[in-house]
Image (cartoon, rainbow, N blue to C red; front, side):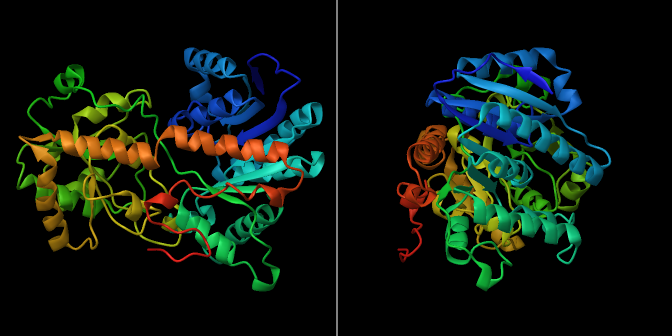
Length: 452
Protein backbone atom coordinates (compact mmCIF):
# COMPACT_ATOMS: atom_id res chain seq x y z
CA UNK A 1 0.00 0.00 0.00
CA UNK A 2 1.16 3.50 -0.82
CA UNK A 3 -0.04 6.37 1.34
CA UNK A 4 -0.64 9.67 -0.38
CA UNK A 5 -1.58 13.10 1.05
CA UNK A 6 -1.13 14.46 4.57
CA UNK A 7 -2.96 13.35 7.71
CA UNK A 8 -6.54 14.45 8.08
CA UNK A 9 -8.06 16.91 10.51
CA UNK A 10 -9.36 14.99 13.54
CA UNK A 11 -12.36 17.32 14.06
CA UNK A 12 -14.03 16.43 10.75
CA UNK A 13 -16.36 13.49 10.22
CA UNK A 14 -14.21 10.55 9.19
CA UNK A 15 -15.21 8.47 6.19
CA UNK A 16 -13.65 5.75 4.07
CA UNK A 17 -14.38 5.60 0.33
CA UNK A 18 -13.47 2.34 -1.44
CA UNK A 19 -13.29 1.92 -5.23
CA UNK A 20 -12.06 -0.95 -7.37
CA UNK A 21 -11.63 1.44 -10.30
CA UNK A 22 -8.39 3.35 -10.03
CA UNK A 23 -8.35 7.12 -9.72
CA UNK A 24 -5.68 7.09 -12.43
CA UNK A 25 -7.94 5.31 -14.93
CA UNK A 26 -10.39 7.03 -17.32
CA UNK A 27 -13.46 6.00 -15.30
CA UNK A 28 -11.88 7.04 -12.04
CA UNK A 29 -10.69 10.37 -13.41
CA UNK A 30 -14.15 11.35 -14.66
CA UNK A 31 -16.53 9.53 -12.31
CA UNK A 32 -14.73 9.26 -8.95
CA UNK A 33 -12.20 12.06 -8.52
CA UNK A 34 -14.67 14.95 -8.89
CA UNK A 35 -17.05 13.39 -6.39
CA UNK A 36 -14.55 12.59 -3.65
CA UNK A 37 -13.15 16.10 -3.97
CA UNK A 38 -16.65 17.52 -3.54
CA UNK A 39 -17.26 15.33 -0.49
CA UNK A 40 -14.00 16.61 0.98
CA UNK A 41 -15.08 20.19 0.29
CA UNK A 42 -18.29 19.51 2.22
CA UNK A 43 -16.31 19.07 5.44
CA UNK A 44 -15.92 15.29 5.42
CA UNK A 45 -12.51 13.91 6.37
CA UNK A 46 -12.35 11.40 3.54
CA UNK A 47 -9.85 8.59 3.02
CA UNK A 48 -9.97 6.96 -0.42
CA UNK A 49 -8.79 3.39 -0.97
CA UNK A 50 -8.47 2.59 -4.68
CA UNK A 51 -6.98 -0.25 -6.70
CA UNK A 52 -4.46 0.99 -9.27
CA UNK A 53 -2.68 -0.90 -12.02
CA UNK A 54 1.09 -1.16 -12.12
CA UNK A 55 1.09 0.66 -15.46
CA UNK A 56 -0.85 3.58 -14.01
CA UNK A 57 1.41 3.82 -10.98
CA UNK A 58 4.47 3.95 -13.21
CA UNK A 59 3.35 7.41 -14.37
CA UNK A 60 4.85 9.22 -11.40
CA UNK A 61 3.84 12.68 -12.60
CA UNK A 62 0.21 11.60 -12.82
CA UNK A 63 0.33 10.15 -9.30
CA UNK A 64 1.84 13.39 -7.99
CA UNK A 65 -0.80 15.49 -9.73
CA UNK A 66 -3.61 13.38 -8.29
CA UNK A 67 -1.99 13.60 -4.84
CA UNK A 68 -1.91 17.38 -5.08
CA UNK A 69 -5.51 17.56 -6.30
CA UNK A 70 -6.83 15.39 -3.48
CA UNK A 71 -4.81 17.20 -0.83
CA UNK A 72 -6.29 20.49 -1.96
CA UNK A 73 -9.74 19.14 -1.05
CA UNK A 74 -8.73 17.58 2.26
CA UNK A 75 -8.82 14.01 0.93
CA UNK A 76 -6.18 11.39 1.75
CA UNK A 77 -5.38 8.42 -0.44
CA UNK A 78 -4.41 4.79 0.15
CA UNK A 79 -3.44 2.75 -2.91
CA UNK A 80 -3.67 -1.00 -3.37
CA UNK A 81 -1.86 -2.41 -6.37
CA UNK A 82 -4.33 -4.32 -8.54
CA UNK A 83 -3.59 -7.84 -9.74
CA UNK A 84 -4.87 -8.61 -13.24
CA UNK A 85 -3.89 -12.20 -14.12
CA UNK A 86 -5.37 -14.75 -13.87
CA UNK A 87 -8.69 -12.92 -13.67
CA UNK A 88 -10.63 -14.91 -11.06
CA UNK A 89 -7.65 -15.60 -8.79
CA UNK A 90 -6.50 -11.98 -9.09
CA UNK A 91 -9.92 -10.68 -8.09
CA UNK A 92 -9.97 -13.00 -5.08
CA UNK A 93 -6.49 -11.90 -4.01
CA UNK A 94 -7.43 -8.22 -4.39
CA UNK A 95 -10.56 -8.79 -2.31
CA UNK A 96 -8.54 -10.30 0.55
CA UNK A 97 -5.95 -7.53 0.36
CA UNK A 98 -8.66 -4.90 0.17
CA UNK A 99 -10.44 -6.22 3.25
CA UNK A 100 -7.20 -6.32 5.25
CA UNK A 101 -6.15 -2.81 4.21
CA UNK A 102 -9.61 -1.35 4.78
CA UNK A 103 -9.90 -2.96 8.22
CA UNK A 104 -6.45 -1.69 9.14
CA UNK A 105 -7.45 1.84 8.16
CA UNK A 106 -10.85 1.59 9.78
CA UNK A 107 -9.64 0.19 13.10
CA UNK A 108 -7.09 3.01 13.25
CA UNK A 109 -9.45 5.82 12.25
CA UNK A 110 -12.98 4.60 13.15
CA UNK A 111 -14.80 6.09 10.14
CA UNK A 112 -18.38 7.16 10.71
CA UNK A 113 -19.23 6.29 7.09
CA UNK A 114 -17.84 3.66 4.74
CA UNK A 115 -18.69 4.07 1.05
CA UNK A 116 -18.31 1.12 -1.35
CA UNK A 117 -18.43 2.00 -5.05
CA UNK A 118 -19.61 -1.13 -6.82
CA UNK A 119 -20.08 -4.71 -5.65
CA UNK A 120 -16.39 -5.54 -5.13
CA UNK A 121 -15.81 -2.42 -3.05
CA UNK A 122 -19.19 -2.91 -1.41
CA UNK A 123 -18.05 -6.29 -0.07
CA UNK A 124 -14.99 -4.66 1.48
CA UNK A 125 -17.08 -1.81 2.88
CA UNK A 126 -19.52 -4.32 4.40
CA UNK A 127 -16.65 -5.92 6.33
CA UNK A 128 -15.73 -2.49 7.69
CA UNK A 129 -19.33 -1.93 8.78
CA UNK A 130 -19.31 -5.24 10.67
CA UNK A 131 -15.99 -4.46 12.36
CA UNK A 132 -16.53 -0.80 13.20
CA UNK A 133 -20.27 -0.16 13.08
CA UNK A 134 -19.81 2.44 10.32
CA UNK A 135 -22.74 3.64 8.24
CA UNK A 136 -22.65 1.84 4.88
CA UNK A 137 -23.25 3.49 1.51
CA UNK A 138 -23.70 0.80 -1.15
CA UNK A 139 -23.00 2.67 -4.39
CA UNK A 140 -24.22 -0.22 -6.50
CA UNK A 141 -24.09 1.63 -9.83
CA UNK A 142 -25.74 -0.77 -12.31
CA UNK A 143 -26.99 -4.33 -11.88
CA UNK A 144 -23.53 -5.89 -12.03
CA UNK A 145 -24.43 -9.62 -11.91
CA UNK A 146 -26.82 -9.22 -14.83
CA UNK A 147 -24.25 -7.17 -16.75
CA UNK A 148 -21.75 -10.01 -16.37
CA UNK A 149 -24.29 -12.46 -17.74
CA UNK A 150 -24.85 -10.24 -20.78
CA UNK A 151 -21.10 -10.06 -21.38
CA UNK A 152 -20.81 -13.84 -21.22
CA UNK A 153 -18.66 -13.71 -18.06
CA UNK A 154 -21.28 -15.41 -15.83
CA UNK A 155 -23.84 -18.08 -16.56
CA UNK A 156 -27.18 -17.56 -14.73
CA UNK A 157 -26.79 -21.00 -13.15
CA UNK A 158 -23.12 -20.62 -12.24
CA UNK A 159 -21.71 -20.46 -8.73
CA UNK A 160 -20.16 -17.04 -9.40
CA UNK A 161 -23.52 -15.58 -10.40
CA UNK A 162 -25.23 -17.04 -7.34
CA UNK A 163 -22.49 -15.69 -5.07
CA UNK A 164 -22.79 -12.25 -6.67
CA UNK A 165 -26.54 -12.26 -6.08
CA UNK A 166 -26.05 -13.39 -2.48
CA UNK A 167 -23.61 -10.50 -1.97
CA UNK A 168 -26.05 -8.10 -3.59
CA UNK A 169 -28.83 -9.18 -1.24
CA UNK A 170 -26.59 -8.84 1.83
CA UNK A 171 -25.41 -5.36 0.83
CA UNK A 172 -28.97 -4.33 0.07
CA UNK A 173 -30.21 -5.48 3.48
CA UNK A 174 -27.37 -3.95 5.49
CA UNK A 175 -26.87 -0.66 3.61
CA UNK A 176 -27.79 2.61 5.29
CA UNK A 177 -28.07 4.22 1.85
CA UNK A 178 -28.05 2.87 -1.70
CA UNK A 179 -26.95 4.80 -4.78
CA UNK A 180 -28.04 3.84 -8.30
CA UNK A 181 -27.50 5.43 -11.70
CA UNK A 182 -31.06 5.67 -12.98
CA UNK A 183 -34.57 6.44 -11.83
CA UNK A 184 -35.77 3.23 -13.45
CA UNK A 185 -33.40 1.24 -11.24
CA UNK A 186 -34.62 3.10 -8.17
CA UNK A 187 -38.26 2.31 -8.95
CA UNK A 188 -37.48 -1.35 -9.64
CA UNK A 189 -35.52 -1.76 -6.41
CA UNK A 190 -38.06 0.15 -4.34
CA UNK A 191 -40.92 -2.01 -5.57
CA UNK A 192 -39.26 -5.42 -5.84
CA UNK A 193 -35.79 -5.35 -4.30
CA UNK A 194 -32.88 -7.03 -6.10
CA UNK A 195 -33.95 -9.43 -8.81
CA UNK A 196 -34.11 -13.03 -7.68
CA UNK A 197 -34.53 -12.27 -3.99
CA UNK A 198 -37.04 -14.64 -2.36
CA UNK A 199 -40.23 -12.66 -1.78
CA UNK A 200 -40.52 -13.78 1.83
CA UNK A 201 -37.00 -12.54 2.55
CA UNK A 202 -37.31 -9.11 0.97
CA UNK A 203 -36.48 -6.34 3.39
CA UNK A 204 -37.95 -2.83 3.40
CA UNK A 205 -36.20 -0.66 0.86
CA UNK A 206 -33.30 1.36 2.26
CA UNK A 207 -33.10 5.02 1.21
CA UNK A 208 -32.11 5.15 -2.46
CA UNK A 209 -30.62 8.07 -4.36
CA UNK A 210 -30.18 8.40 -8.11
CA UNK A 211 -26.84 9.86 -9.14
CA UNK A 212 -26.25 9.45 -12.88
CA UNK A 213 -22.91 9.60 -14.66
CA UNK A 214 -22.36 13.32 -15.03
CA UNK A 215 -19.96 15.71 -16.75
CA UNK A 216 -18.13 18.79 -15.56
CA UNK A 217 -19.63 21.59 -17.65
CA UNK A 218 -16.55 23.71 -17.04
CA UNK A 219 -14.38 21.12 -18.82
CA UNK A 220 -16.78 20.11 -21.59
CA UNK A 221 -17.58 23.38 -23.28
CA UNK A 222 -18.43 24.76 -26.69
CA UNK A 223 -15.09 25.57 -28.28
CA UNK A 224 -13.45 25.65 -31.66
CA UNK A 225 -11.96 22.41 -33.04
CA UNK A 226 -8.31 21.84 -32.18
CA UNK A 227 -6.29 22.34 -35.40
CA UNK A 228 -3.59 20.01 -34.07
CA UNK A 229 -6.01 17.10 -34.06
CA UNK A 230 -7.55 17.91 -37.42
CA UNK A 231 -4.13 18.13 -39.09
CA UNK A 232 -2.67 15.04 -37.43
CA UNK A 233 -5.63 12.82 -38.36
CA UNK A 234 -6.42 14.62 -41.67
CA UNK A 235 -9.91 15.58 -40.56
CA UNK A 236 -10.03 19.13 -41.94
CA UNK A 237 -12.70 18.38 -44.54
CA UNK A 238 -14.38 15.48 -42.72
CA UNK A 239 -17.88 15.29 -41.32
CA UNK A 240 -17.04 13.69 -37.97
CA UNK A 241 -19.40 11.55 -35.94
CA UNK A 242 -18.54 8.83 -33.45
CA UNK A 243 -18.54 7.15 -30.08
CA UNK A 244 -16.51 7.13 -26.85
CA UNK A 245 -15.73 4.30 -24.48
CA UNK A 246 -16.51 0.62 -24.24
CA UNK A 247 -16.33 -2.02 -26.96
CA UNK A 248 -18.23 -5.12 -25.83
CA UNK A 249 -21.20 -7.34 -26.55
CA UNK A 250 -23.65 -5.04 -24.78
CA UNK A 251 -23.19 -2.46 -27.53
CA UNK A 252 -24.98 -2.87 -30.86
CA UNK A 253 -21.96 -2.07 -32.98
CA UNK A 254 -23.33 -3.28 -36.31
CA UNK A 255 -26.41 -1.06 -36.00
CA UNK A 256 -24.24 1.89 -35.01
CA UNK A 257 -22.10 1.54 -38.12
CA UNK A 258 -25.16 0.89 -40.28
CA UNK A 259 -26.56 4.24 -39.15
CA UNK A 260 -23.24 5.80 -40.15
CA UNK A 261 -23.52 4.13 -43.55
CA UNK A 262 -26.90 5.75 -44.16
CA UNK A 263 -25.66 9.13 -42.98
CA UNK A 264 -22.65 8.87 -45.26
CA UNK A 265 -25.04 8.73 -48.22
CA UNK A 266 -26.13 12.23 -47.14
CA UNK A 267 -22.73 13.47 -45.97
CA UNK A 268 -20.10 11.78 -48.22
CA UNK A 269 -17.12 13.12 -46.23
CA UNK A 270 -18.27 11.27 -43.09
CA UNK A 271 -15.58 9.85 -40.77
CA UNK A 272 -16.54 7.74 -37.78
CA UNK A 273 -14.18 8.19 -34.80
CA UNK A 274 -14.21 5.63 -31.99
CA UNK A 275 -12.29 6.79 -28.92
CA UNK A 276 -11.56 3.77 -26.73
CA UNK A 277 -8.87 2.28 -24.50
CA UNK A 278 -10.27 -1.21 -24.94
CA UNK A 279 -9.28 -3.92 -27.38
CA UNK A 280 -10.87 -2.78 -30.63
CA UNK A 281 -10.03 -5.90 -32.64
CA UNK A 282 -12.82 -6.66 -35.06
CA UNK A 283 -14.26 -3.14 -35.18
CA UNK A 284 -13.04 -2.57 -38.75
CA UNK A 285 -14.63 -5.83 -39.90
CA UNK A 286 -17.96 -4.93 -38.28
CA UNK A 287 -17.85 -1.46 -39.86
CA UNK A 288 -17.06 -2.84 -43.32
CA UNK A 289 -19.81 -5.47 -43.02
CA UNK A 290 -22.17 -2.56 -42.29
CA UNK A 291 -21.13 -0.85 -45.55
CA UNK A 292 -18.39 1.56 -44.45
CA UNK A 293 -14.97 1.68 -46.07
CA UNK A 294 -11.79 1.13 -44.09
CA UNK A 295 -10.89 4.82 -44.42
CA UNK A 296 -14.26 5.84 -42.99
CA UNK A 297 -13.33 4.55 -39.52
CA UNK A 298 -10.72 5.93 -37.13
CA UNK A 299 -10.15 4.02 -33.89
CA UNK A 300 -7.80 5.66 -31.41
CA UNK A 301 -7.16 5.92 -27.68
CA UNK A 302 -7.40 9.17 -25.79
CA UNK A 303 -6.74 10.20 -22.21
CA UNK A 304 -9.61 11.63 -20.12
CA UNK A 305 -7.89 15.01 -20.30
CA UNK A 306 -8.00 14.91 -24.11
CA UNK A 307 -11.70 14.04 -24.53
CA UNK A 308 -12.78 17.72 -24.26
CA UNK A 309 -10.30 18.46 -27.10
CA UNK A 310 -11.84 15.79 -29.31
CA UNK A 311 -15.53 16.55 -28.87
CA UNK A 312 -15.57 19.89 -30.73
CA UNK A 313 -14.71 17.87 -33.86
CA UNK A 314 -17.86 15.78 -33.49
CA UNK A 315 -21.07 16.68 -35.30
CA UNK A 316 -22.94 13.79 -33.71
CA UNK A 317 -22.53 11.16 -30.99
CA UNK A 318 -23.83 7.70 -31.93
CA UNK A 319 -24.26 4.76 -29.54
CA UNK A 320 -26.75 1.91 -29.16
CA UNK A 321 -26.93 -0.45 -26.18
CA UNK A 322 -28.82 -3.73 -26.13
CA UNK A 323 -32.06 -3.21 -24.12
CA UNK A 324 -32.27 -5.58 -21.13
CA UNK A 325 -32.89 -5.76 -17.41
CA UNK A 326 -29.33 -4.58 -16.76
CA UNK A 327 -29.67 -1.77 -19.32
CA UNK A 328 -32.45 -0.21 -17.26
CA UNK A 329 -29.89 0.50 -14.54
CA UNK A 330 -27.16 1.66 -16.96
CA UNK A 331 -26.08 5.25 -17.54
CA UNK A 332 -23.77 6.60 -20.24
CA UNK A 333 -20.94 8.92 -19.12
CA UNK A 334 -20.60 9.74 -22.84
CA UNK A 335 -24.18 11.06 -22.96
CA UNK A 336 -23.32 13.74 -20.42
CA UNK A 337 -20.03 14.55 -22.14
CA UNK A 338 -21.49 14.84 -25.64
CA UNK A 339 -24.35 17.06 -24.50
CA UNK A 340 -22.12 19.22 -22.31
CA UNK A 341 -19.90 19.83 -25.34
CA UNK A 342 -22.92 20.84 -27.41
CA UNK A 343 -22.94 17.65 -29.51
CA UNK A 344 -26.35 16.10 -30.32
CA UNK A 345 -26.76 12.34 -30.00
CA UNK A 346 -28.46 9.42 -31.70
CA UNK A 347 -29.25 6.49 -29.42
CA UNK A 348 -31.94 3.95 -28.61
CA UNK A 349 -34.57 3.98 -25.86
CA UNK A 350 -34.84 1.46 -23.05
CA UNK A 351 -31.42 2.25 -21.56
CA UNK A 352 -31.56 3.87 -18.15
CA UNK A 353 -33.31 7.24 -18.21
CA UNK A 354 -32.24 8.19 -21.73
CA UNK A 355 -35.87 8.24 -22.91
CA UNK A 356 -36.66 11.02 -20.46
CA UNK A 357 -33.44 12.98 -20.91
CA UNK A 358 -32.95 13.07 -24.68
CA UNK A 359 -35.33 15.51 -26.34
CA UNK A 360 -35.81 16.36 -30.00
CA UNK A 361 -33.70 19.46 -29.50
CA UNK A 362 -30.58 17.55 -28.49
CA UNK A 363 -30.93 14.10 -30.03
CA UNK A 364 -32.87 11.33 -31.71
CA UNK A 365 -34.21 8.18 -30.08
CA UNK A 366 -34.35 5.42 -32.68
CA UNK A 367 -37.35 3.38 -31.56
CA UNK A 368 -36.42 0.41 -33.73
CA UNK A 369 -32.96 -0.45 -34.97
CA UNK A 370 -34.17 -2.00 -38.19
CA UNK A 371 -32.43 -0.75 -41.29
CA UNK A 372 -35.33 1.42 -42.46
CA UNK A 373 -35.49 3.16 -39.09
CA UNK A 374 -31.75 3.76 -39.08
CA UNK A 375 -32.00 5.32 -42.55
CA UNK A 376 -34.88 7.51 -41.36
CA UNK A 377 -32.91 8.62 -38.30
CA UNK A 378 -30.00 9.58 -40.58
CA UNK A 379 -32.33 11.86 -42.55
CA UNK A 380 -33.85 13.30 -39.38
CA UNK A 381 -30.43 14.18 -38.03
CA UNK A 382 -29.94 16.69 -40.85
CA UNK A 383 -31.95 19.17 -38.82
CA UNK A 384 -29.09 19.48 -36.32
CA UNK A 385 -26.70 21.18 -38.75
CA UNK A 386 -26.31 24.39 -40.66
CA UNK A 387 -23.72 24.10 -43.43
CA UNK A 388 -22.28 20.98 -41.78
CA UNK A 389 -21.86 22.68 -38.40
CA UNK A 390 -24.06 22.04 -35.38
CA UNK A 391 -26.48 24.95 -35.18
CA UNK A 392 -26.32 27.38 -32.28
CA UNK A 393 -29.86 26.42 -31.22
CA UNK A 394 -28.98 22.74 -31.06
CA UNK A 395 -25.77 23.38 -29.14
CA UNK A 396 -27.70 25.50 -26.64
CA UNK A 397 -30.32 22.77 -26.24
CA UNK A 398 -27.62 20.15 -25.63
CA UNK A 399 -25.87 22.30 -23.04
CA UNK A 400 -29.11 23.08 -21.25
CA UNK A 401 -30.08 19.42 -21.10
CA UNK A 402 -26.68 18.52 -19.67
CA UNK A 403 -26.86 21.31 -17.10
CA UNK A 404 -30.37 20.34 -16.01
CA UNK A 405 -29.98 16.58 -15.72
CA UNK A 406 -26.33 15.52 -16.04
CA UNK A 407 -24.23 18.33 -14.60
CA UNK A 408 -21.48 17.52 -12.12
CA UNK A 409 -22.78 20.05 -9.60
CA UNK A 410 -26.06 18.15 -9.32
CA UNK A 411 -24.30 14.86 -8.66
CA UNK A 412 -21.83 16.25 -6.14
CA UNK A 413 -24.65 17.98 -4.24
CA UNK A 414 -26.52 14.70 -3.95
CA UNK A 415 -23.43 12.94 -2.58
CA UNK A 416 -22.93 15.75 -0.08
CA UNK A 417 -26.58 15.44 0.98
CA UNK A 418 -26.17 11.71 1.61
CA UNK A 419 -23.06 12.25 3.72
CA UNK A 420 -24.71 15.07 5.64
CA UNK A 421 -27.75 12.93 6.38
CA UNK A 422 -25.73 9.93 7.51
CA UNK A 423 -23.59 12.17 9.71
CA UNK A 424 -26.39 14.06 11.41
CA UNK A 425 -29.20 11.50 11.81
CA UNK A 426 -29.10 8.68 14.37
CA UNK A 427 -31.19 6.17 12.43
CA UNK A 428 -30.75 5.05 8.82
CA UNK A 429 -34.46 5.29 8.01
CA UNK A 430 -34.48 8.98 8.90
CA UNK A 431 -32.39 9.89 5.85
CA UNK A 432 -35.00 8.94 3.28
CA UNK A 433 -36.26 12.51 3.11
CA UNK A 434 -34.48 14.35 0.36
CA UNK A 435 -33.18 11.17 -1.24
CA UNK A 436 -35.27 11.57 -4.36
CA UNK A 437 -33.81 11.15 -7.83
CA UNK A 438 -31.95 13.81 -9.73
CA UNK A 439 -34.01 13.12 -12.85
CA UNK A 440 -37.56 13.15 -11.48
CA UNK A 441 -38.13 16.50 -13.16
CA UNK A 442 -37.75 15.04 -16.64
CA UNK A 443 -40.97 13.07 -16.49
CA UNK A 444 -40.15 10.00 -14.41
CA UNK A 445 -42.25 9.59 -11.32
CA UNK A 446 -40.96 8.51 -7.93
CA UNK A 447 -42.28 5.29 -6.41
CA UNK A 448 -45.91 5.40 -5.36
CA UNK A 449 -46.94 7.90 -8.03
CA UNK A 450 -48.18 7.53 -11.54
CA UNK A 451 -46.13 9.07 -14.29
CA UNK A 452 -47.45 11.57 -16.80
